Image 1 (cartoon, helix red, strand yellow):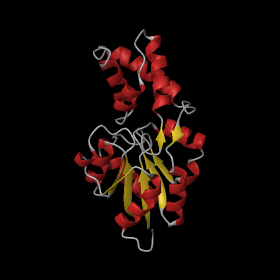
Image 2 (cartoon, one colour):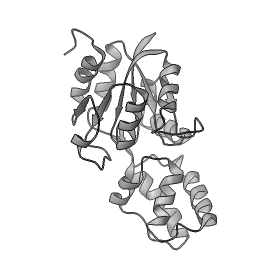
Image 3 (tube, one colour):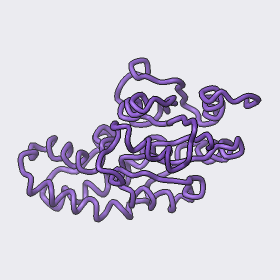
Image 4 (cartoon, one colour):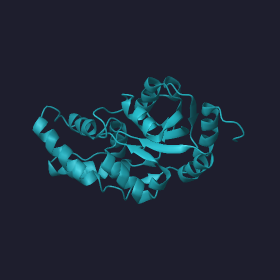
Length: 223
């Protein structure tokens, strides 16, 4: 059994809002609907693709049309898997992942992004080599903040102790319900003040993450 660090993806490891916005706007415009702004995109993500589309349509007064929702969701998912060219890692992510691996920690991803787009963006950015397991929003019958996806990620990594790293209200609740320490990245898509979210550590610079993880896991000799 090893110690693990499991990450959320969108808004934590990568800023994917520009790609999500472009994919969604393409489909919305096909149906004569207003495209998204980046601010709207960031405020709608976090609960999976289906709820993202619901929020897009609700904001345009079209929430009561299930047929439209199904069409928009199918069109969005069709584009979403290859929507990687505008997504970038947050500063310091790669160095932090290397440092965590050097500490002997196994790394994983637990995201509400569907698994195929999650794997696609990790491959595109060359981040996939860091992760021993990826749980997506469609890997189980439930999504975060249900603790089951995080628990499945932990089990898949054989983790005896875990720190979950995320950026949002959903992530904070997931960690709390799973009973694991939570490190909050404050520069992601969070909508709630940091002080209002349960967390064991908060950081805005990935250079600080290894030290927070070491403290959460009770590791000694790690700066």
